Image 1 (cartoon, rainbow, N blue to C red):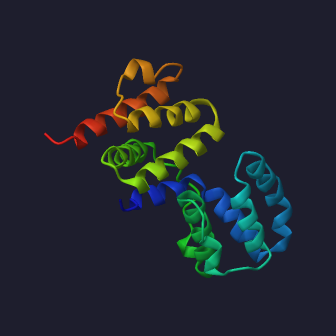
Image 2 (tube, helix red, strand yellow):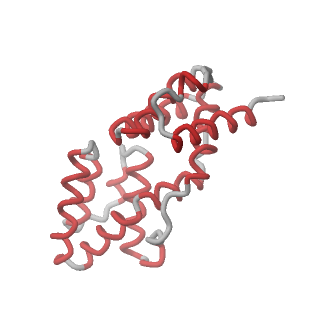
Length: 184
């Protein structure tokens, strides 16, 4: 399964502030003081591996080997920082948040591929579920629904239990997209 460009851009938008802060701190060491609390929070929320990579970048390392072994989200963030250090115009816009309209089709395409036996999609789905669980709240509830969805379970009432209206809307979008992806 190929990575969707929309998914990469979604990740960049969701983490635009962090990307900009790391680039600014690399270019002006005085900015590192403002960045430090964000790095500590990220590390305590399960992003320890990414924080280690960011600290290496802050220390001056720019080797593409930094990307080895990273999951997709950490890789996109790291690539965006490295590219931003070379060309400031490549940085994601700060005034655009993550686009929720991209989430349902992106998640559904991964679930669909996993259902088709794509092992990469299944691994990616597991990583997404894990990250969503660490985020807590509705993200954790959506993450918990990914396993049953990948096994073909689509009982909306059961999957949506305990979700807010926004999360239920995302779940419905995923289910609608999965229906669209089914062969007719």
